[in-house]
Amino acid sequence: MSQDLFTAPDYYQLDSLLTEEHLLVRDAARSWVKKAVSPVINEHAQNATFPEHLVKGLAEIGAFGPYIPETYGGAGLDQISYGLLMQEIERGDSGIRSTASVQSSLVMFPIWKYGSEAQREKYLPKLASGEFIGCFGLTEPDHGSNPSGMTTHFREEGDYYILNGAKMWISNAPFADVAVVWAKDPSGRIHGLLVDRGMEGFDTPETHNKWSLRASATGELLFKDVKVPKENLLPGRSGLGAPLSCLDSARYGIAWGAIGVAMDCYDTALRYAKERIQFDKPIAGTQLQQKKLAEMITEITKAQLLAWRLGVLKNEGKASSAQISMAKRNNVAMAANIAREARQVLGGMGITGDYSIMRHMMNLESVITYEGTHDIHLLITGMDITGLNAFK
Image (cartoon, rainbow, N blue to C red; front, top):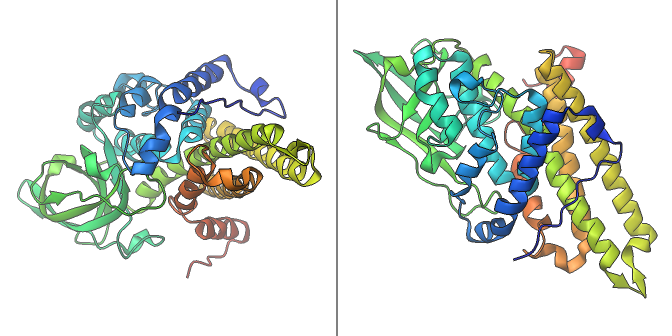
């Protein structure tokens, strides 16, 4: 079992921009990752198993609904604290961060924002404590980047809605207690429904044979004449904008999380380059390796500034969907590039489970696709700056 020697880079002294609360939240998460995640994550990734015992720890560090009010079991933190939590957790592993992101931004957020008071009281405290795990059903087998084309639908029948359809690529699905499912009513309007495990006709088969996010549980959501009580419909908002607002929150967290991956790859490469002797000196003393490392820390610093400024805008209620898309796209691509360069610094050792880099590389191939693909986010920026829709 390798020791976690991670030291976080802060080339522009950005810690001085953080409050004492931010630092306390971040450092608690960083300590937990070193103690609880790093020692076990390689084994779980190698075996393609989800470390369920980490759920309790995620709840204890406030990773489930950190910005949800304390009234409902959340930590009542600001958006920068949320970002820092995602950064530290994803430094450990993208799959573990996915569990926290889905729980917070895709399950707790819509229940908090669009649910009834009864729904908030029923679900949010249990989700915050980790007693309940949730998942989010939007993507379908034939509708990924075009969620408005979804075919999952429901109709009214007495005191229930009858739900039919299927969702796929759903994080947390195999063991989720509740699913926030987006489906169309007979008029074609999209609504959110809370579907509880155990409802007849609801199944969650696990997705196997993944080369990415191997320590994360992924599955499908299958609905065959599922009777959903009418009180389980989210009353606060309908239309495609409702699930997209949840994705904004998740994408924001990813923009921070990707920095954690990049920091871990950079720190690993820097330490290795100082220790690895070739031609009678450390490879860190060669021009090509210094070029790689210097470019890594430059891109990490730029991404940190981007995420911090976006966090300030989020706290002020001024962050736009397009700004969030830019940060998600930029920071994930940055992390993927750094992971590949860091792997080269380590040479052959970079592909082994003794180091985190190859696991991060594989995970990022999912992160660069989910919550909006790399290309879709580019078109979101393009539409925002030109005013012209290039999606059709």
